[in-house]
Length: 601
Picture (cartoon, rainbow, N blue to C red):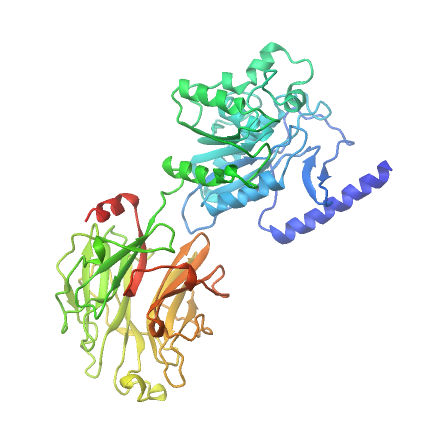
């Protein structure tokens, strides 16, 4: 029977490796040690999986070789916060999926790189001192992250730890025993910069501890000195890192007093601390099942923002015009990207002053590399230039300027829907727009739409004073207008554009791709919108979803589609809400501080 079970475990381990490789090929486990400190060689001690009711492995036993499994956030050259993830399991196993991989994926969604720690479970069979084995692994994991910060694009001042149940005991031990010299090491700090303790075991004291965790870590006959040492509420001092604690009142496995006592010790030593105790949840709820405790990930996200570990939640802004654009710039805001509310009672923030018709249609606003907000807009139906102004706060604007980008073309009929994109590598702004030049591109010339036959043109500038000669930007082989560009990978760009063809009718949005902001861009895709004459696309990425907002011209309202891969699109028009009368504009973000000033206008 024993041999049969061993074969089953080996088969399950092999299958799990296959599953893991297919699902998380980029998450290869990295051994922590060349030589494991205090190790005892034991060939009969072999790692295995615990099986759940449905036969799926849900825990790892008999860990002999400690590793970290990286879940990296990749975003250009930006340095990211990082967190060591310590799964629970009573120091007898590791709940590696629920309290490991899934937690890492959640942290990634917050812009945090995560490293799931497969730490050694205390055992006299493989350790000379089982009490310090897990802590050795936690300390070395933190040091490993700091040593490899450049390689993994980590912020060395934002290396934290999160632990669940007994993993919470390990995380709190790492947060209070980081100066313990328990193995030969270099001078790299093992102190976490912050800790998140989720239904943690904190104390080893009878009556409050989780007895299984205590016995597994300290043995059955632990001395009072050892019990006190690893009762981490007694080890807090002013150097203990800022901490958030999560617990449920009805936790009958690890009493809520574990978190309460640790919080009180943090408070006593004036360590920044926050605690959320929920009415229900019991023990081991992971990211949440049902009830009030399901709010804890959001509480942690807010705490991380308030402690400047992750960026503060931005406010989404929308610049737009109403009517014919005669009254100027309007602004709306949203907290979630779905429900939009106008500012200043939907009155204009800036009255147009330049151009033949003195209009302010299609206002496009971006924040540039100089910290200023730069805006371009359509000034007229028939002019050969565009409007420009800049602002520090979206309230006070520079003198408006007319940029004559098409005056060199005698047969240019218009200059419509200009947009700006900033190139952070060249420190240049690229401005692009749609123009019809009479006689150009005769293969797509028709009498429809008053004979307009647009293509996209562009110029570049570093200071909005000197501009490069205007050039053709995008020629997709059809009448094109309303293009906007977003960076979607390290050095890749996607253009959202409108196919303006009326015969046979298109009037829809498409996408094209390029490895360079300047192009060339690929052939336009199939339509990503329906048969409602979509125009004026503007795009933002929220929670890993690309959302394209647009004017549903024939329906006289705003619509939206979303995608996670820029290939498959879902219409979410029924989920969004814009102010009445909103016309073609641009989505961008501002800080909470900037928003409060704007809201007071």
